[in-house]
Length: 131
Image (cartoon, rainbow, N blue to C red; front, side, top):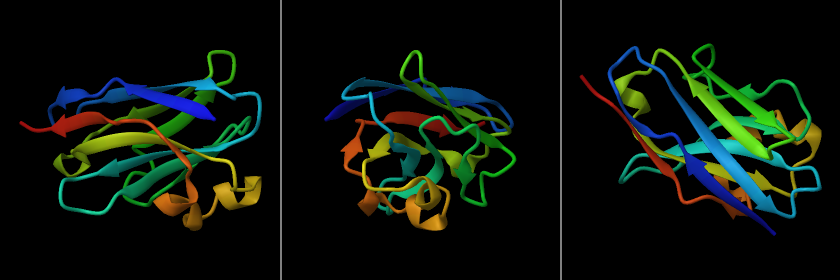
């Protein structure tokens, strides 16, 4: 099993930036498809970005591509989401997730932006974008 803990959320004005972190512990000595999801109250959780263990680049939903960057640090067992040029529509609770069933190829497809393929989740961190 793996435990995930998010941090870095907060309040920011439109156009601002935040960097979310996800610290992993437990069985981290294996490959995972890692992802960031977000959820607005009353709406379904949606995938934001994915990355496979050791991969240099990620896969993004279209609305955040060119504004968000997913990255990882294997040494510190951490996952990151750099969010730039934030918009009010980015306001949500952001979750870190890990999948043991996604292959490298699958991790970089739109199918990995659905939450039913992930078996480990953090508790989330709130991001609020407002003027």
